Image 1 (tube, rainbow, N blue to C red):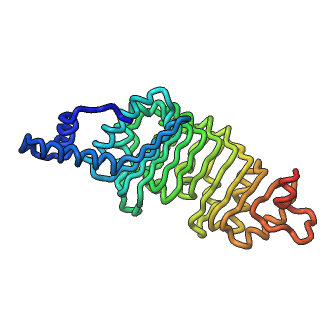
Image 2: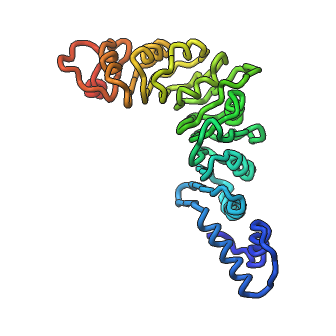
Length: 320
């Protein structure tokens, strides 16, 4: 339960943030103002606390008065939990990513304790929607898991700037309709390194941010590729990537034609486990011809009728 705050302070905060004029000092008006503030805070406040850990899930409307009121109430709770790690989910019910930056910067003093962070916009309307600017974001040294949904970046350097803000990442997911405006001029092709990243989920569009850039992720174990464009030439795209990585597990989801799968497996020769989701039938036939010494485990594939050589079935992989 939050500490008691004097009514006059709540009333002053409400009048200031909502731009109301202080026209009456009557008890009735005072109680009405306080009630409206409390209603705003409850409506846009979704914070769940358990006995074992602290989970912060914050959903903001795009009206700044509500955001401010929520941040004030939330700040009290964060201050009381100063010795606990945080897991935060911030969703903005608009297409304006500047609100995400507003909330992140407002919580800057607490971000040193954030272990898991989900940032998302409810909807995105490319190519006209605004883009996320992280140039003023603090370094989040304790952040281990980051998820971006429906986030659009101004350019490839902007996305890589975010990666520099999160040097301890172990898991990164860029999903939804997130993408980087890779067609913009990109000067300064500095190398990118994520030494602790173990799981990476990204769409084909996001890969363009690493074109002609040295990218080192030595600890990567699981790579998930989401393909939303069947006509994309993965062979051409991969030929422009310079990745220092050796993932052992690959997950493909979406419209991957046969030639694309072959190019991807050739680019990541260390893959030992392969999972498929929503891939065309011709891909399944192709993968059944792989020998055990190339791909030791294939998942979500039907058992071979004769089981002569080829990739192991799920039952065989489980027994191994």
